[in-house]
Amino acid sequence: MNNKPLILVAGATGTQGGAVVEALLAKNIAVRAIVRDKNSEAAKALAKKNVELIEATFDDPQSLTNAAKGATGVFSVQMGSHPGNKGEETRHANNLIAASKAAGIQQIVHTSVARAGDHANFVDWDKGVWEPLYWEEKAAAIETVKAAGFTYWTIIKPPFIMINLLPPMTDVMFPTISQGKIITPIAPETKIDWVSPNDIGRFAAEAFAQPEKFNRKEFAITGDKLTMTEVAEVLSSVVGKRFEAISQTQQEALASGLFKYGIDSYLWQNAEGYQVNPQEISDFGIQPESLKTFLERNKEQLQTIYSELK
Image (cartoon, rainbow, N blue to C red; front, side, top):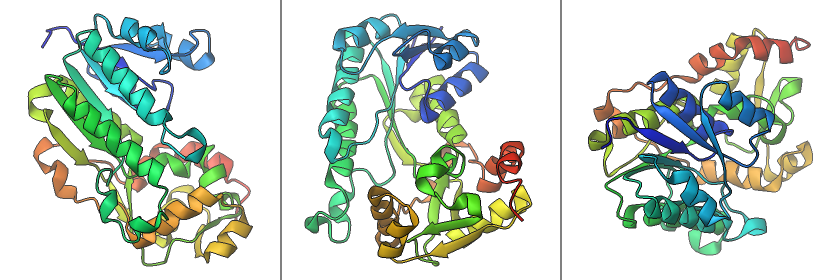
């Protein structure tokens, strides 16, 4: 590997890419970020951190190749698929991977989702109830990364991301949380695997720093396995306000404001779940943070948001 790594980060203004940028900078690794508009506020914030900006889009392979030239590694992340954007994730992943190869990139760290590639084993998979496009395109991107011929590749597979408990994600994921009620169709006994976005960044940065150690590794990360009642208890203890987890039927959850795809994903948690084995990352020597630790770091914001609650 080049003694002076330069990592090209896709999704640098998003949750996962942004966490990777921060973790790389903490290791004094140079970062180049793919942005759609250098003049956006998010891009300007990156520039202030001495991140090199280059304008490119996933639908313009040549712009991606230009972005990758001179870099030693690429962090790859794409938006998940649904019926309204069929084929987009596969196309974007293929374009980034092909561009990286054309530019001579040696290493890629790709982030996907826990259980990607295992979808055919889901209960009732043959009935098409678990949004096939989402899982099939996630799996296809992973296989493309593995088959591309990079000297080093690593696949990180996060489960439920803790940022879903922060605005603006709560507006979609838990629309009643501002009332102190976390309403979902998740069963009271269902334990969910949670991961901090910071840990996605930490593991990715470590993979770029130690490519041999992380080469050809595919793993999921979990910082906590909690029921929604336990999540509410942790949130209550951090914020100092009372939060309650309420399990509803599918029909009741729809009426409460949850969107259909979110409800389907919660029902999937009951039937399958991410099933992350913490031992998958035991050899890397990195301890993921707990949900309480993540929320404590965001305590001031949370207390301001929920100041009106009892």
